[in-house]
Length: 216
Ligand code: URA
Image 1 (spheres, rainbow, N blue to C red):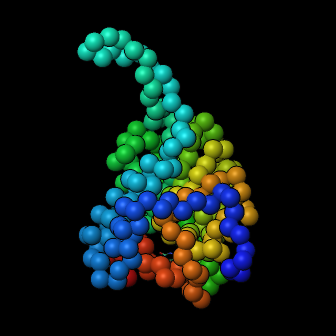
Image 2 (cartoon, rainbow, N blue to C red):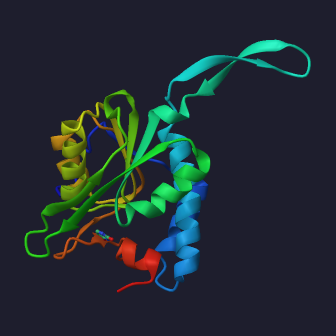
């Protein structure tokens, strides 16, 4: 990407020191699978905190030990977290620790190795998508093709209130995603330099799925 090219307003890097520290540990080549998974879970909890900042609250009547009061509560059932398989599941787990009532959807897309274009093989969502706040998760926003395809599919299924959360983003992925879905905010723990010829993020952390599950 031309370095002078501005990133879209819809893109935000969450520069919290805890996130940045944990991300550095994840990037290191010697970090074992167990620790990688644990760190991803911890970071996703922190990302979920940011991604849910503007969720609606409803007032409910409760009783404290001293008196009744109207107090704010989240309508957890209105939230849907959508994992782009398989690496999205690593972010999903931590988010569910924080928001256990959220509904969960899965989109299965694989990247055609020749064209790098996404091909859908699985799509399962809770009902009432149009009324839900939908958080789409995938650790790596690389070419952006899978994320664009997943969000397009979700919009066709009725979703209107969407946001996309990732761990690492490449400038190309951010531009591609924002060109297709300017209305969908992107939150990332970092913006890396570029993609290599195989569509991997540099400096990156390697293949997120492989590092998470100990596969090659
Ligand atoms: N997917 C990954 O797992 N890593 C990358 O760097 C790019 C896409």
